[in-house]
Amino acid sequence: MSTAQETHQSDIDAPNLTFETNSLYILLSDRGDKSYTFHWRLYLHQSPTSGTIYHLLNDTDPTIWRFEHIPDQTVIDERELLGVLKIVVLDPILHAHFLERLHQVPIVDSVRFRERITCRVWLKEALFALDEEGYIMLTRSVDDIEAEARNLALRNKSLGRRTVVRSCGSQA
Image (cartoon, rainbow, N blue to C red; front, side, top):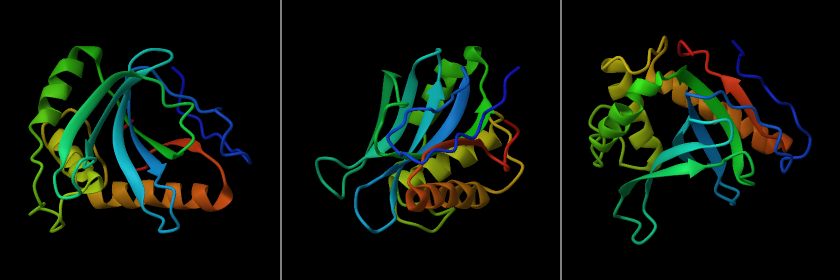
């Protein structure tokens, strides 16, 4: 069984990222500004070359969020992608149920995390629900996973690289 590998790169455009089939990842993408905020997505790598992206968008109105899942996506070549955090290997029999569960994550301000809804807050709520229901097994808090992902993206943005790493806060 292979393990997720950290890929050190000096050129952020180099597509040398390694993903494992049936693994769930958190993707953080650069928003292109100097604010060091990111677009947060879940990604289930389902074949040797592609997978499904799950995320929230507010593309038509900044106050209206919507859930989107996009199958058959290849994220390796995404120029904006900064950090990829492996969370778990997800049995293929659970993939359809996983999507159904993500559809049920509320798109409202979070009472649990006391934050207004964003793609990041929705992802935190999704991780909490998935852990609580046994789809994934977190060994640290959702806030710790968030910090781990954010630190990875911040470090990579400042160093001009992209990496895939296994989370220290889950049983990947």
